[in-house]
Image (tube, rainbow, N blue to C red; front, side, top):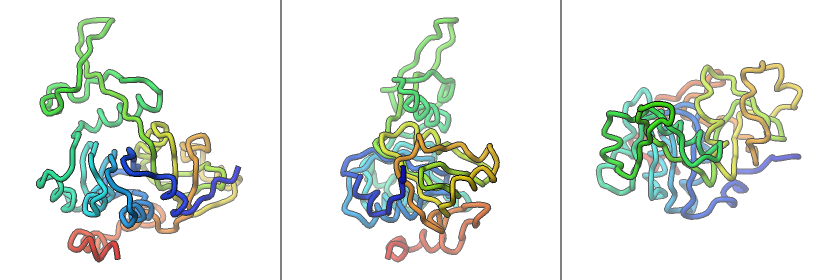
Length: 256
């Protein structure tokens, strides 16, 4: 099945109020061409789930976000995204601030279609203080008390990969796969942008460890060379620090 789609085609599948998971990590391998398309669209009242970077800041600045669920929001070489910080300080968005391990486990639970998963992440932290709706459970095999991290089901997941074929099989060539497969597994609709579409037979030449995301986790593929820019997408290209600084200084010009 040919799953190639355009950015406009992806946008046509989105709606106000959806919960959107965005792959990547900080300012690394973010699906920025798709994020910019959302920022320029008429969509609104989105819940964004992310190990956040400029995806979060840009969508906050564009007024698209109702709620954020995140483990952090950082531009890596710039510790805090200024547009996220402004939205957070003004109370312009609802937030669910989680330990990184809790966010991972919430996505994993959703991908397994479980209501929650037990974890030690978050114990002894203020996460439970600020989110009293979170519950703990006692192990049935002993007395240990654990956080019952609720599933984080997504309406849509967006990720950027290095290579893909037309059927949705992908190859991740960088040093870290992050948690993209969990975002895709937790979602009802799953879209990936890629640096380059290649024949299926060429995917195997990149080695088995790179083939973490297959067509079962992908509903649409957008060929988008440079689609992660300005974020890091090694080995294809590094982070464009000048462009990142320009984004921080003038987000409107970045969107123009």
